[in-house]
Length: 320
Length: 241
Image (spheres, one colour):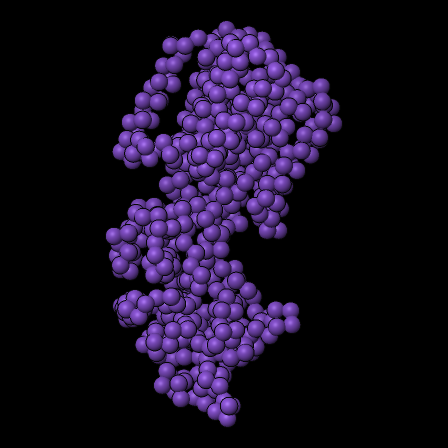
């Protein structure tokens, strides 16, 4: 484990200096990677640490985005107040889902189905909510793109890159701390064997709810970023199950339950997706869906040959 | 004074009378055995004490306080540690981390929990294996890990569910020595369910015998092995040919 801090320091320095080295396109790709590293880390708290499979994390992104977006759209209130509202709403929603599931002992696949159901009917709900624009979407005003306006979170791509870098680094540090604390041990015990965990004095109901609350709060912040980065929100898009799957793929490919897994997974997947697009463009193939086929084949290979993800295998190689 | 007082508890599963009106107590600082043939209701009794099931009728008092109907985690927090007959290690965690999970009940900080866990592992002879994943342990070591984890919660009463089953005689003797030492040095009260008579006879000062869900005998090991009802349920009636 001695080499991990060195690796982290090099990675952090590289990421801070990255804007000096690359252009705007690469910076937008890097922002996207950090975004998925962040949301993957958030999802990992629930599934990787506490063993509760959520397939509906898009609901927290969406509710967080719409909460902060609505405040800005209707009242001109900036995202700093918006992020507080987003976190409050998403934690409340997570606690409702968690309470229902854990109170009535819904676990495993059925818990996952419940999370999908919540994401789906929230999507349908927003489709019928005129206040947020319904299916036609909500568009946030973009006044300027040149100077850093941190109060309203408006500025050049560089600002969004650094904001996402700070969030991803913060999430990494938070998860590293959680994993070494009592909460981390209790969650892993629940993940490995809930009955044995309970016999050791762990109120599993309460600790599982805490995992959901933290995961939901973290994801809500990603939603606020999403709203102010893309400036347009559509229920069909933001709550869609493919959004939830996108969040999950990073940690699954990188290594569920590990700290570096979500980061590595997000990097590999985003670069792969972009790489395939570029490669196909270079070769000149324009077959519809060919990108998805390549993407799927690579995912399949990783899952088959590295069922625990890339990071555990890589860590063993590097002897970290 | 009795630390655990089981008062005419019953538990039925649909039509099956698993435990019927069973009463016994465990003296503070004592070692009590609970024996009986397969299906006698030992594990059901054990699970009622540990909070897995609430008894249908009857009471269970621990240090004078009613604990029947509490959840397993509340029972553990009250001071009753348990092991599982079919061992349940946290397979993905290291041996030390397994025991730390238990230690966190009384120690909030990771460093203190780690120190407490390391001490317990030394005591159970697992010190050298503390960094191995729990999944790599052999069965005797897994049984030791079960005990170590339960001990880390600092129980006043330790419930052992067939913790000797599957051990070789020498390993069994080592475990007996560990429990004797725990009982003598720390004053930990022990209630053990056991099939291995060698272990029960060596450890228990008092034995309760269950048969078909009912208590049929109580007493010292010497009294119990001479009890006619006990001999009958274990060896069959003398007249039977």
